[in-house]
Image 1 (spheres, one colour):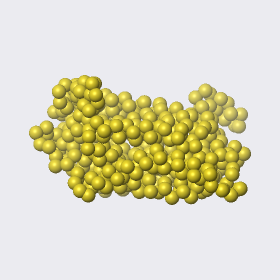
Image 2: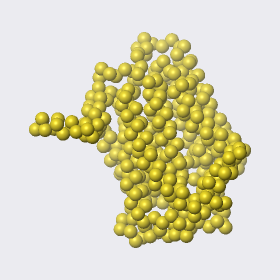
Image 3: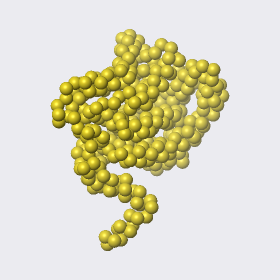
Image 4: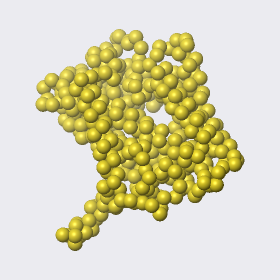
Length: 392
């Protein structure tokens, strides 16, 4: 029997699965903060499966899109469940991804030699935002139409080619049927690109191995990923599935905007255009800048800041357990992100405008100035001998 099991794992595809998901050597001191990557992967699979099923019944036409959603909800067997799992699953997906990113920032997981892991992760985040945005357009509700109009028109601020980009995105001179068809095609394609990038992300991570809470070389104390960490991941999965089931069964529209339950009307502008909650922090940064062009640059600077972190931040000690200044200011950054999310849902009026501008300044100040400065200060402090450990 043992010989049979070993011969099965020698098959090329199964051997890859065995090396990366079964016998992969993992530091023995990982805590629950390392569960979010696995959960994000499972969420991506769930979104792809439910999305493919919904695509079988969706009609990408401005006159029929909203009706096709109602058809899915009312006439397709378990269609309401597919739709609500897909819609609310996007919110849970972003929640898990954001926590995963915050964990990486907290433990400085982006530093050498895992720069490529972090860079691929930032690309995944960018494509995830694009995918979710165009997915929000597909129901063709009131907020879908006007959200698409406002966000796509921002490209017109790009010098020389801006208006050409907007015309290409729209497929004409306004958001209409060609726009919906293009977004539908992209929304179907991008999740598979995300899946491919996730595999590259995982392969890059496994090249050097995972970090750990102590931020030290853990090569001497590793255990197999299965069954130790698959069991921990399963506990987290059950917990999230429980809360997700409560939301889907008892409050499926709690996180969505009421205006998107109304068919799109190009002759009626909503009182306020508000994106989904997971976009609010980006939206807050965008509207905190008075100029449209500078607002686009600010959004670009968000991802430039994330891309540059592995190169501007080189701590000698990685673990926050031994970095009191990093530990303190990190939580101010978390608070700042919550403030930006809150401001993004508020009306554009005082004092929300001023608060959003201050929160935006702190966001960039923390990533581009404070983070590398703290690393330099802590490197020049007298550290206890127990902290001078080899990091990896």
